[in-house]
Length: 108
Image 1 (cartoon, helix red, strand yellow):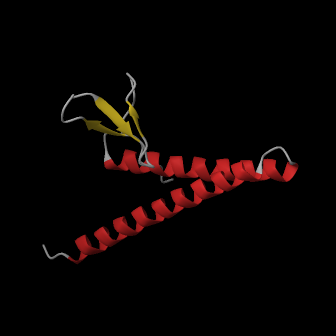
Image 2 (image 1 turned 180 degrees about the vertical axis):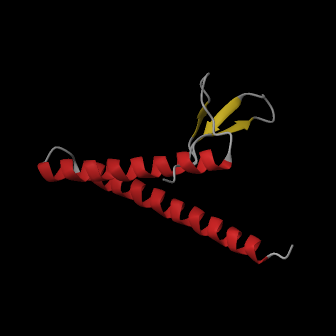
């Protein structure tokens, strides 16, 4: 199964402190002991996992709304977040497929 592009470690040019940028672009300080994907495959796996979790969360919030436990605003936020995550994942998949096709057309 495909996962998600997890946290990417960035070094500040001025202070040298590490910050973490998650799949959706939010930046936070990297806590000690944070596990970062060391390979491209692991990064993709983490990204897909985050996307699946976001979609499952939106589904759970929608079900809670049907029961009357959750506000409509929370449902809209969860569904919009899931839509954005899915669109991002599809765009990444399309880029990977395009790159693969270009590589396969290269002559050796």
